[in-house]
Amino acid sequence: MRTPLVIGNWKMHGTVAEARALAGALRDGLKRPRGVEVAVCPPFTALPAVAETLAGTPIAVGGQNCHWEDTGAHTGEIAAPMLADLGCRLVLLGHSERRREMGETDEQIARKVAAALRHNLTPVLCVGETAEERRQGLTFTTVEGQLRAGLVGLEPAAVTRCVLAYEPVWAIGTGVNATPGQAAEVHGYLRGLLSEVTSKEVAQRLRILYGGSVKADNADALMAEAEIDGALVGGASLTGPGFIAIVRKAARGAASRGE
Ligand code: 13P
Image 1 (spheres, rainbow, N blue to C red):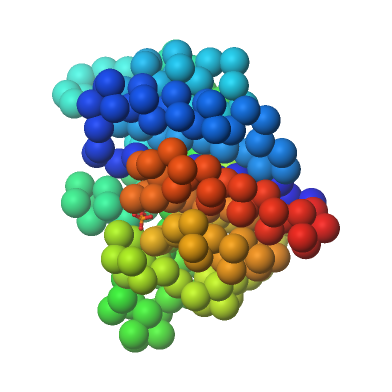
Image 2: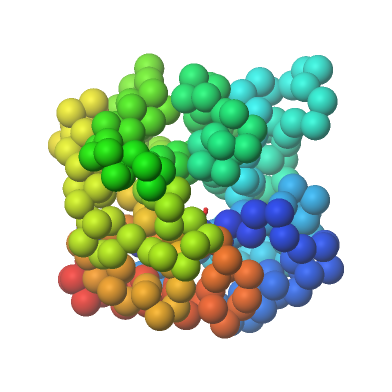
């Protein structure tokens, strides 16, 4: 029903030459991915080279962030139309590293989501609780606040054009992934909320990806969960074979569930 989506978030890694080589490996290794959609989000500096390498392939390219304004005096920022101009089709927004390191607020993230939609980019809205929030039993409260704030003011038709990513902060880059059960529980909660703020139909159509220490050896178990519609992969997306293995497992997981 929902085609799984696997996105590689390359974060702040790689020269242009390295990015081009990795994109080339994905192009050659994923000629006709079946039953799965694939995207990569390189650093801004590598976007033109990666977009050029992947032109004409089914692998989409995205940005890791954008500003909420379309243009203007915002030193060091990148606008959504600039990403669209380079051939990007999606953009990650509200990643926990940006919330934590740059102090991004829910309000700014909502404006970024709107900017992405204005320029026909798929916003990938990231939500997730810290270890402390989980310990205090605040997981649902935290992700609910981030979800409601990130999508505030959007018509259901606009929400349908978004992708959600559940990335528990404690699982990012730690090697400790959420268990399939823990992830599925939060995904189910988020889908219930989406159904409340939009409609059951929209909620059923929206993809919710899991991110946080996804690797080839835990992808099977995570992707076997009906509520997990793909993965947002950090570290393991930095090598061709590792990322390709995850993509194949996501496609197989959906196929085995009859999707
Ligand atoms: P890791 O896969 O390195 O844990 O990173 C996850 C992530 O933050 C993807 O956006």
